[in-house]
Length: 302
Image (cartoon, rainbow, N blue to C red; front, side):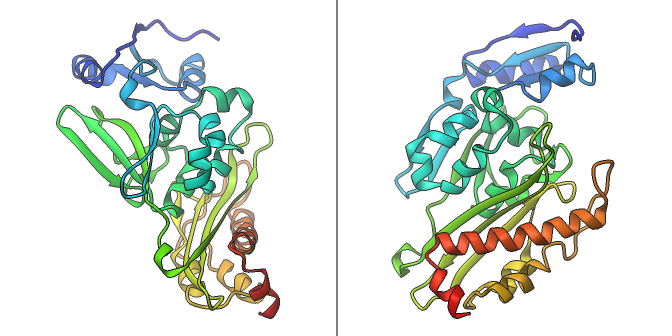
């Protein structure tokens, strides 16, 4: 299948990108890795008259650790780089784990962190991880730059806080909390995937901090694929935080995984089965994250 005709631009600075977006408006589309946009163009579900390739904009590349310990990843960081970069693996192991289960090798080598976030497919893997890590999304446009908490970025299927003339420039992940209190964090991302595409029917990102007494000092759980946008499972977190985990407690907390959520049913699975998957995968992700935090003894005692 062949896309409709378009004009191709390959700017080298954000200022050039903004000028092109201002000139062409709704007729233009931004191209990062292209694994979502190009198939849509071939099917003529998207027919941009102008394609703006971000690949040479150096400001959108790079991985670094900031003075406050936060990890900053440029929007053009590929899934493969997120998965393998030693700095990412040390500072954000959950994000590296998520990148390793996105698509196949070809997708991971070309697809980008920023492109996936901006596209905001409800079944994509990154949003849940970014919510669990309490990440921030850096965006820029002709009107200036701003930072959006991940919890305020994803609104619905393919809908984000991005304005039409803005670009995702980077993702910022703060240093893990509680280091001065001796907290030890464990992370896990699990998903039930559509085998043909590896998109999640349900995905769960769990982060748990274990304190010295063996209690869960902090709990963050986020899900994707369940409804129109990734979300934090506040009821799960509240049930578990401050308590000494056990298999029974994990099951009780996971039973609240879809509380207050309008679970989607579709041609792939019913809403009832998707809700069941959400609870099962939440329990598993919590248990494995706790083990990675060194909580096996507390589990046995629970």
